[in-house]
Length: 217
Ligand code: FES
Image 1 (tube, helix red, strand yellow):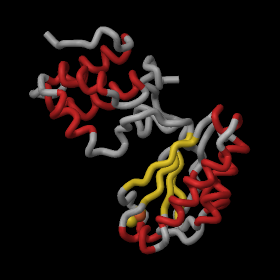
Image 2 (image 1 turned 90 degrees about the vertical axis):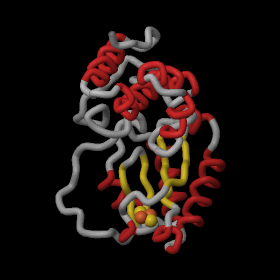
Image 3 (image 1 turned 90 degrees about the horizontal axis):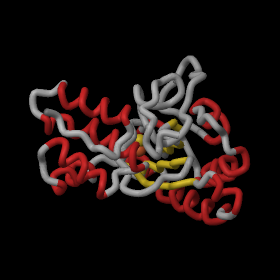
């Protein structure tokens, strides 16, 4: 019989059962279960890792070793806007450290009541596959290429002032981007509604929602 975590939402318990049953070995379900656990706790907490260990029959340390490898599994709370600055080699050579410093300093400047309502979290990440448009930045995993420190500051001010419900990459590229890696072609009318869930089919506009957990707002 498949173990379930009783404090998970009913929907997520059912989803976990289906996922585990779809693999010959329970441990193979580790990644999707970590994702669901992060929805329940808003991030991959210590409790989440213990729960996933229980479900998969491996140790919490083994779960942690996987969770800590992937930056999209967050180990702490994330604001409504997650700004990810790539600092890998191409972006680094293009001035990513200055972009990151500008974002961090700008978030400090706008900290206050308005920012606290929909807080902004910044992180530096490894290559996000947009090296030709370095330095590259994402907001809620929506891409902007060719970002300068000045544009990064403007981006943070814009997020704070306008608090967009949906993050659109085309809009941000137009407002805050520069040189792109290639011509993107047709514009995308969909976008990200929040940093977590981060990728389909669990989240984003147009995708289904896992819901039920503390992050499934
Ligand atoms: S090095 Fe930054 S996108 Fe590849």
